[in-house]
Length: 258
Image (cartoon, rainbow, N blue to C red; front, side):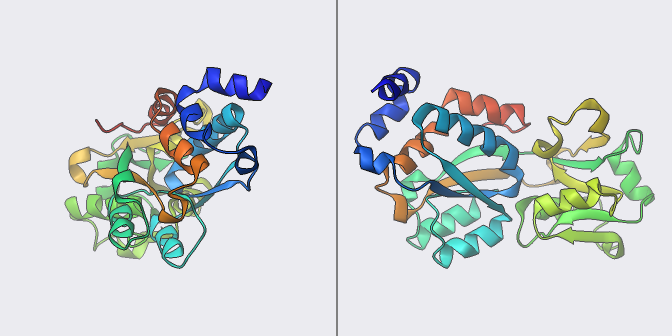
């Protein structure tokens, strides 16, 4: 009962939804969700806070948006999908695999050219044009929306074809980041969220790419049909809209759609 009272006092929104569940339902297996790689750090904080408030464990599976989309289509048992684009959630809704009315934008991402070495460059546009690097890391454009955005930037600058021999592609945004962090690539296009909270000694060189260089990275969440009547899934979906979660999202450099 003490846990129930704390839960109601701390999270009325969650209580409204979870209060309808039986104790057995609340003790069910963890809630499995699919999360685009760029949102790794924020969702860990969000899931931890949700567990503190409700006692319910959320287990994220991370990967490229395209890969997660394929897994969902093949029957992966996820309750929610936090995509890095709007296209895959829309397709899932059209295919009858997601609740159409649940599709909404939870964050708008920003693309950054990054090197872990401070002073490596000032103007990222200049260093790209000068070609002062051996390898440039990006996420696979066909699977990762941030990779597609990186391609759009290079096309905008007229460099996409000329830089092909130097581009290394990560299967996900996490792998693209790791290529740069490990020194296998001197530069890389990553999400602002991946470096926003790095300590000063690790921030390196950064170029926040002008938003006019690429299409908006509109990241949408959708409740999957298999979890349409799951009170915990609905509670977590609702929690993602809470002011506390929006504050976490902003801390990592995202914008919130209004």
